[in-house]
Length: 215
Image 1 (cartoon, rainbow, N blue to C red):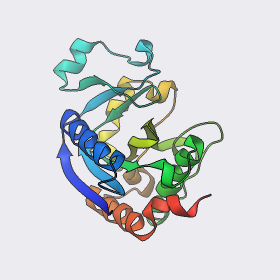
Image 2 (cartoon, helix red, strand yellow; image 1 turned 135 degrees about the vertical axis):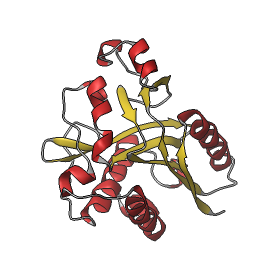
Image 3 (tube, rainbow, N blue to C red; image 1 turned 120 degrees about the horizontal axis):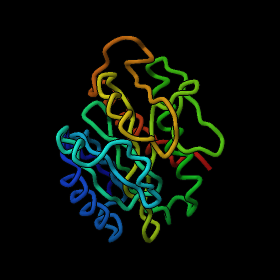
């Protein structure tokens, strides 16, 4: 079996979701050992299994005028936003062959993000009892996963572009009153999605996203 990386580029959420389901089935059936799907999305607000309607601050008509879709998903968590200024990664693993521990998997994804950001000179951290990655008190990356038959899907989003942060003001991200930041905001310079993508894929190829090194 082999592990693969799929780069979908800028793609709508529905298309990426269909592709993710196809790869999920291949990993579940043992055709692939594991996979990493990377992409960016056209503007979309996604609703996790535990979302609350009051965490969307504007009505659906306004979102429609802004060309922002709203989609229910299978992932955990509340409300979040995805846009072209983010790097999205959907790791698909069979945890039977790693560790059947959801909390361990979440911490492993956080470690991957923290290591990627460190290569840009950004000191990022976890906050106890919260999921995601933070720079000081601002959130720079979100994680929302789903697991079925111990195979993972959905994943993580790293905010890269500063000009894509405005749409977070339309929601309460993850159901919290927090400030979202980005790689560009922290570094105070322009950074391309491709730059972050190169670091993420290299780290993934080096050690399978740090998952095999955390126990």
